[in-house]
Image (tube, rainbow, N blue to C red; front, side, top):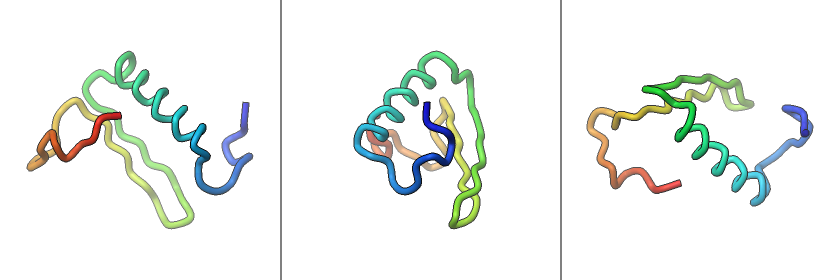
Length: 66
């Protein structure tokens, strides 16, 4: 298995597809109501919110299917 920073740069098409599939699986089997994460990046922190509720003012059509 690849270490966290073993590969630098953008994801390959295969890596992006694996991320998509793992995220779908996580959302189906692990996510209860919501989850929040923060990750440091070269451009500053990135914040992730996974939720079963639409954000205020959000419309379902704003969100493409995984």
